[in-house]
Length: 317
Image 1 (tube, rainbow, N blue to C red):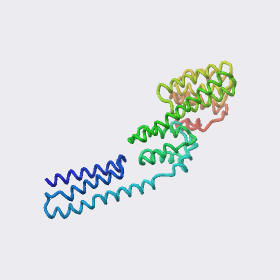
Image 2: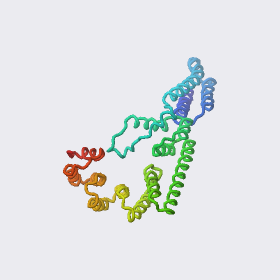
Image 3: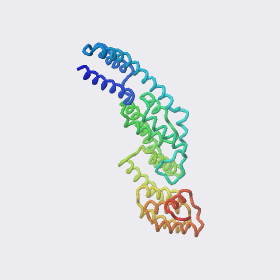
Image 4: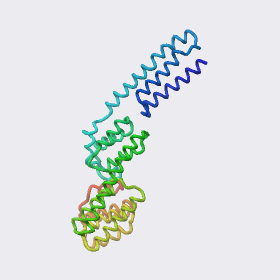
């Protein structure tokens, strides 16, 4: 019988340790109380013989001290693992989205982002809450990613704080967007339009919006640009529109508009960048080879992104 009791106590002890160190939802006071209960049962259980009594009476003292020792060790190493939230986290200013894999990546900053992700993955409740509140880099996309990670955390308080911060951030962007739209609607001036479009671009890229809401806003962004282009023929407006056509995979429309623009803006390198991205994303190898030939023949300036596309596709520049 006593062996069965000891087995149950061992399982109980393992559960306490698991809850404390892995789930992090057991307070230190409860940790001590539960260890005390284990020791109490070990010490006062009277059905084992004298030899077993010698062993288990000593275990009754060893268990709580071993638990406290492990708890303190965990705290010490957690502090060593934790990087300085305020000092180091704000170094992410030039972070590049992993989806833009054609551009050069700053490995140092990528590793720091991984450290930030680890903070939300392995640190305790207090560290995560501090991180959520204090982590405010200039690149909003990074903050959004950290908050989204907090929204699926196993600790309900971390989820709560992440939800509050995320909702506040989303409301702030919605409010600013309405303000820019109102200003532009009232004046129709070039500067007001540029301010609106620049803000809208950032809003669409920072990952606050998702799913159907994101698609809706992309359509609204396209509509604003299409209406503006009727009277404002600046090339940068066309480039913005074509880039969003690429995002929404309107490949035929992109090619058609680029050909029209090249009749007016012959050999313009920005239009050629759009065409190169179009053929790459639509997996049109023949189109890429053709555009590469035009780059060479017309001696058109080639961006690093375009060079990387040709290199990935095995096309000699």
